[in-house]
Length: 242
Image (cartoon, rainbow, N blue to C red):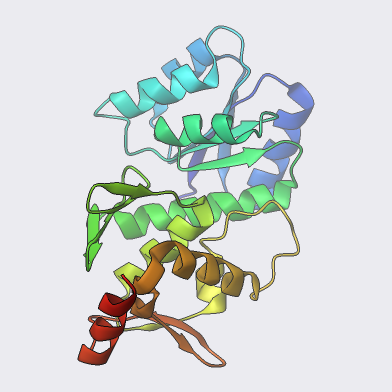
């Protein structure tokens, strides 16, 4: 029997912490709660959990500072962090991700949706242990650790969902991925996510990649595939509109 994954929750709102703890234990996780940033970080050092759930507005030390300390510590930096916060402005989300957080969940949220996000982050952690940190195609470079896509020196902004989908496609070049497989990389607080949401994100990706959208094939009735290379006709078409 596999050992339960250990989650450390740093949350000072007692009712929220109790709700998350109940749902986590029902989902098969072992969860420990700390109520302030200073003791929370000490607990991370001491216990080295499998995942940290981190509120932002904490007494003692805020969640951003705790996240920064985790990611600057060589012994802790590989522990995935999901930020929980009532702050959901774009700048707050970007700050958390730039500090190294793996995901960001805005309050209020469904405990079941949170559990699905925990499961996805833990699964991605297993996938990325041996996966490359830099992925390239044509003139593009995807820097996995920095959540960054570049075309030569130009940075191309991606949403979290676009980044996750592109990374998954690149890691599986030549393979057809179903919409349901790609749904794991959608970051959406809506419980009613449907597989056609993938089509919207793929369309947005193709638009941002410009002429190089030809790298992504639509496999009708199934999903999408990232090409291992562009054929001569596709290269000509790309050059003609670049």
